[in-house]
Image (cartoon, rainbow, N blue to C red; front, side, top):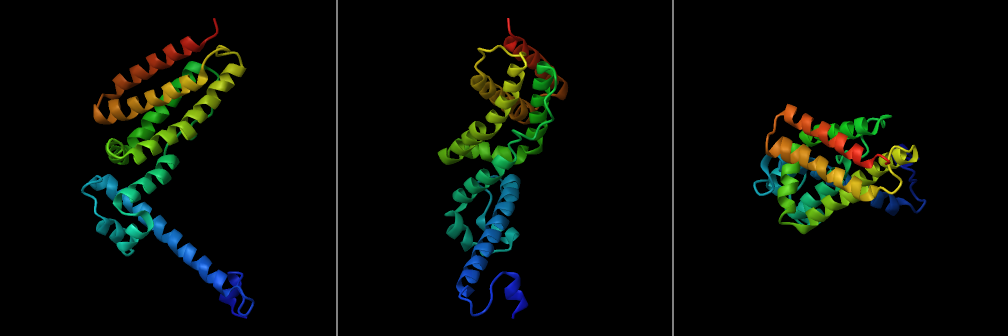
Length: 220
């Protein structure tokens, strides 16, 4: 028995050779796509969408440039695939510290966490946001990330406070969560990255906003 075949669960003469070859091809394609996505994320962040070339991306990935067209239908499709993979991974919606006992404190911690995340991902976010203005598919993917990841995670935290009586029973938590998520992006990317507002000014805004939102949600 061939040990290498056995390790993959494929034995000569048992009718699985074709299946093994197909599995290897799938693994090879998956590895190639992953390498292209990793390389594209870096190149897009460094060059921007327009200046990035498929030749450089393929070169960094160590694969044939033609595979970008075959697997992703070109550079636009590749960026969308990068957004679909990494924007969700890096959305930061659930990667947060445990909820605090105090709602105002927790809102402040959430906003500060989003500030840190936005700064970390600022170069890639610039590219994605600029492209979203002219590519509806990219804009739709950004919206899906908010609606399917960050907003539900924030809603879950808020629901926990409502169950403990810290938030009014009739509060519209879906809209509150959506508003806070949008606000966190504005603070994290626009104020911090685009406008270059100083840390002290942003921290003051975070404190005021956390206090105002928590006060507005408190049962009367």
